[in-house]
Length: 599
Image 1 (tube, rainbow, N blue to C red):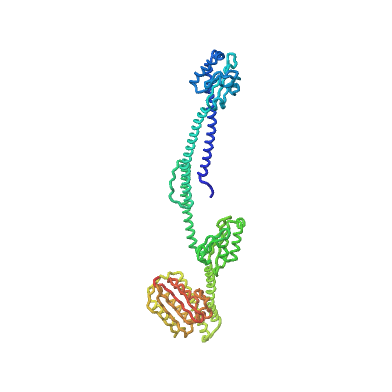
Image 2 (tube, rainbow, N blue to C red):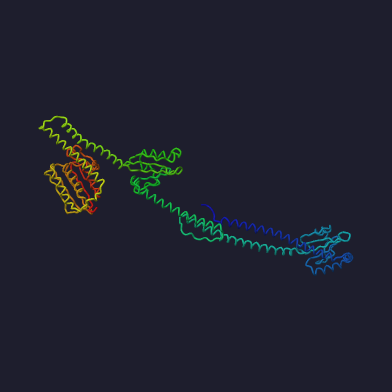
């Protein structure tokens, strides 16, 4: 910011103004006073001449012509009471009498300027050098007229011009004193302005500077007799309070907005009119693999999200005018894929041009799409699973109804066995579906008991080995200590039975199955290990889905419903626990159940 202080603007102008005023005053007063003193001196000489002329009556004048010595004696008497030089000059220029010199020794004065004009009947004054006295003199000559109106003589009064100068010098001294007094008063006025106006203004500027630096502290009182400065201070103080309140409100709103952005699961990018990122949130940092916000801020959108579809839409928004994109812009919605995750993208213009701000919201729909796929697969699988036993039951029932068989026909018993088997399978599917429905709707905290996990494992193993299909199979139990767990024993036992049953089904009859339990921190971990067929690595994430089968043919052959692992997963979720598997195809699988000791 360029500019000068108030004193830098006013003081030079005030100084120049004062100097011009003083100079003009000195010149004007000097000229005027000089003229006044000169005119006053001439007027005094004229009055003296009038007085002397009244003393010279006609008789004396007539005698003068006859006896000049008598006139000289009169002038010598006048010189005693007068400081002026008085000269009586005859019409021919001869000096008849003089108060300072002997008339006989004086030359003819007819050619003196003032005498020459007086002889013509006009009073005249003149300042010139006196050849007689050798100094500058002020001369004033007046004509003396006789009874006939003719100039009978000239009376000249003179005084040294130095006396006039001395009078003028006194006046000039007074002028200088007055000028100095005026300068002193001007300096006092400047100091008054500095104290009463400039200092309060400087303090106001300092207070305003604090406000500009967002230092809204207690304002220092400013004392000034000027009501304008007082009003300005009051307005500044009020503005400061309002500005502080507004900044606080904006700060609170910003914190609230930031809290909302930080808590959102959706990734947010805010772009300026050039397409550079100016704001983001933690979800966006995670999405675009940025360690901190500074790695994204300032970058262009194509550096963060490499998507042809996104780039095409943003290019239209950034390069288009407000009229071409029909502001307010309806949100653009489309789907893109970033790092094998699916996102639904929303683009909207927050503020119009020229400083256009663009908001991009990335809504992660990967899980939603996955659930939609699971739903479609579930519908297809459950339809297929139910259709198979129903078709078998219907077909063999129709055969028995519409074909004639002898009572001892062995086919009747075979068909009835098939119908019985498919009915059992259908019943198992329905029961498992009801179990899943119950787990999703009911609270697992019902029927909770503190029970030994070792006893639960033994009971589960006993149920499995007593089945006809697994008769003779041995299951090793390895529990180092008796651990008590707060749980629903029926549900945990069902989960263990499902895992043990699967281990027995999908492993060679001669291979071992081991059930272990151990205590770790505040959890108990139960593992069911087999040396069976194993699960391909790419299929492991889906094995807990309903009706999902790794090997559909083998699963149906073993009599599974496809819901066992889904039931295990929901039982563990109801107990705030978890289930996961380590498996290698052709080597075997180990399922782990993690249960908290206290729910």
